[in-house]
Each structure stands twice: as C-alpha cells, then as structure tokens.
Image 1 (tube, rainbow, N blue to C red):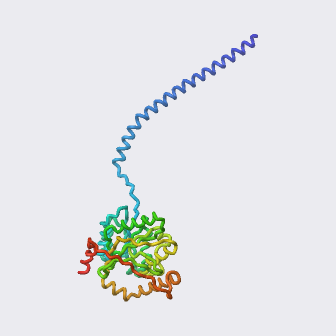
Image 2 (cartoon, rainbow, N blue to C red):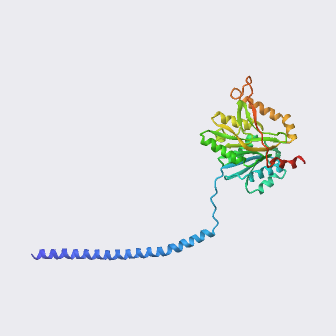
Image 3 (cartoon, rainbow, N blue to C red):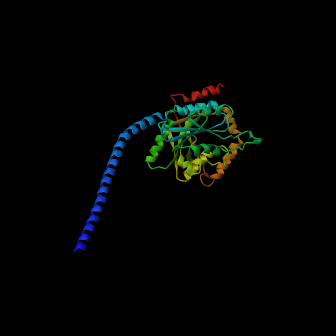
Amino acid sequence: MFIIFKKVKLIKNMLLEKLDKINNKVENLDKINKEIEEIKNNLQEINPKYQKNRDKLFKTQAILPRTEKNLVSVVIGSYNRRSLLEKTINSVRSHNIRIPYEIIVVDGGSTDGALEWLIQQKDIITIVQHNRGEFQGKPVKRRSWGYFMNLGFKSAQGKYILMLSDDCLLLPNAVNLGLDKFEEMEKASRKIGGVAFYFRNWPEDKDYYVQYTLGGKLFVNHGMYLREALEAVGWADEEQYIFYKADGDICLRMWQIGYEFVDCPGAYVEHYYDRNEAVRHTNNEVLYCDREAYLKRWQGIYYHRDKPDLRKKMTNVYDDPTRTAEQFLELTNQ
C-alpha cells in the first residue's frame, strides 16, 4: 500500500512539473505575441513616413520616360545633296504624321557639309557608309544601292517603312493617306507589301504617276513598304544591281510570294529632276547593265521577250494648291 501511494505521488509531481513548463511556454508565447504586435505597430508608423520620403525622392530624380514605339520609319539615302536633303527632311517634319515616326538617313560619306548638318539634327538617326574615295592608301570599296539602303531598312523599327530619295518633297497628308490605305487593305484581309505614292519628275513632268514594271506589276518608286514583307524577301538585292532596278526587283519578289501592291490616290511626291541628271540617264552604262540584269533575273517569270511588254504608267492629274515644287526654284536659279 505504501509503495502504491509513493508511485502516485511521484506521478503527480511529474505532472505538476510538466504543467509548470507548459505555463512557462504559454507565458513566453504571450510575450512573443506582444513583441510581434509592437513590431507591427512600429511598421505601420514607419511605412507612411517611408512612402512619403520615397515619393519625394522619385519626384526629384530624373526618370527615363517610356517612349511610344515608332510605327513609321522614314528611310532616306543621300550623298552630297545637302541643300536638297534639308528640304526633304523639312517636308517630313512639317508633314503632321499622325503616329510616332523616326527618320533614318544613310549617308555615303558626304563632303558638302551634309554630314556635319545631320549630326546636329537630334531627331535623325544618321548612318554613314563611306562609298567613295580612299582610306589608308587604298580605294574604298564601292557598294550597291541595295547594300546602302538595307542599312536603313534593317535598322528601322517601324511597322511601315517610307522610302524617300534625298531630292523628294512630300505633299501634305501623303503619309497619313498611305497609312489609311494600309489599314483599309488589312481590314479587307488583303496581303499588302507596299503602297505606291504618285510622283512626278519636276519640272519635266506635268502629271503625277505610278509605274507598273515587268508582268504589269505595280511597284514602289516612292512610297511605303510593310517592313515584315521586306524582311520576308531578304531585303533589297545587294549583288545583282549596282544602282537601278533594285526597287522593282524588291516588289516583284514580294508579288512572287503572295504580297500585293496598291496605289494611293491623294498621296503625292515631288521629285527634283535636273537636266544634268537626264543626260546621265541617257548615257549611263550602269543603267544599261542593271536593266539587262533585271530582265535576265525575271526572264520566263514576269518577263517574256516574245510577249507584249506590260510596263506602263498610270497618271493622275492634280493641281497642288500648296505649290510644294516651288521650293526647288532656287536650285534651278543656281
């Protein structure tokens, strides 16, 4: 009996000891919970002060703004045509293009002050590809029109590429009308590679026109390309043509893989064409070689020597109320 009582007492003491330990843990837990609450309260007080200081800090720092993506890339090739180039650039700047755009000029190493002028124009991306002269006692390798223009085409970030010569002036609203035409065709589920603007060689031509090349296919002399279509055909040919016919070749390759080209009534370009240039064209070995290469490339596809020639112009009579071409008059008086 005594032994049983002793065991019971021992068990009781053990239970009481465990109970004391549990009570101690509960007390410690209460302390921890109180400390957590204090920390939370402190954080709530600190956070508004931190947020206020953070907002003040970010307001005073120069933050790089997020820029809108350029949807049109204006690509212009140029060499030693500063007076004309400035007029071309100004016609783009004053054109009120309704969406973000960029201007890319590929310069062939001009020596007439054009390069120095371009560097000062902060809204222009200038690419220099020296294409003439000597360097380190060796002649600079001459590159083709395709190589030259591809530097601009491949750099372009826009969905659409407006190709202009450095001796061209846009008439009001031409680019916006080109964009409208692309949107119209896309809504009609037509696969459009480019939109041709009407142009004339001033002062030789009276009317504006677009041209149809081999196979009676419309192509872009001056106008807009869909960039992804240019990429799909591997850009401009850099090997077969020196200077002429590469633009027609681009368009025929697009037609070949299912893209169409459409004209854009209302979109006009003035192209300055002086008499010296006309003489060069009639006596130009490069033009002859490029023309032969063009015919050979498309023989049996869009060109057949024994069939009627389908090349033609489609004219559009328009009287420009803004007299844009008169900007060229000072050049004819020089």
